[in-house]
Length: 263
Image (cartoon, rainbow, N blue to C red; front, side, top):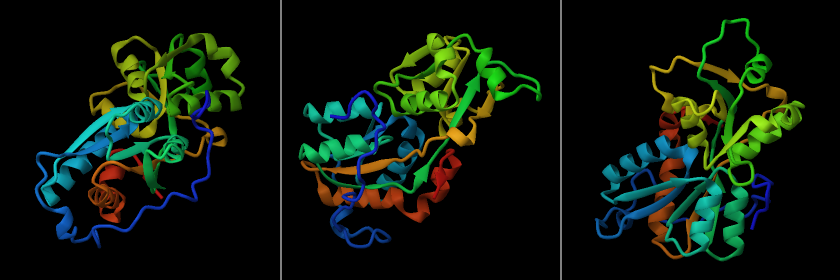
């Protein structure tokens, strides 16, 4: 099992999945039959909540195949799957968890998704235009991040702070949360003055949000990678069809509209 640093990278050269359901453009007939009594179950990283919900709804409309989405931190989902939770698909912000499940024989294959994001600082307060990122961090008495021991976004945030030489200064102000969306919620509710989250998470703030959003310095920005994996014990053909659907260039607009970067 991945250790205390969950974003340690494992080789991704095994991330290929079997060809199934023929070309996804038409979604082969074998994947379009009604399966209302057996929905496709997708376990997805919390940072993907809005995009996966939207894509799952669209897939269901096109294929008449219901999709059930369960979101949490990548490490939590991986442990649930290892403990026996049925997941047809596992989509993680830390591919090392997918590789771990492959080694355990629980998932059969996967691939790196063509999306990424970057880290930002979100604050409740609005600063004037002269306020720097460092000043915004220095003035934040309570800084929420996903728990670095378990949450990929939190591990990325810690790595960035260490790279910038700021972890030691801010460590005692850190509020660790169960996932990246909980860090964002801590700012929204006033439990934290600021949070480091993915840029894609800021979409959840809505148009009425009036606080600051700072992009973290590029020289220490991590390479954020998402991996998607097919479970061994579900409907493999339908799972592959869903993963092809969400990876299709036709879904690019959905991903980018919700704050992700297509690469």
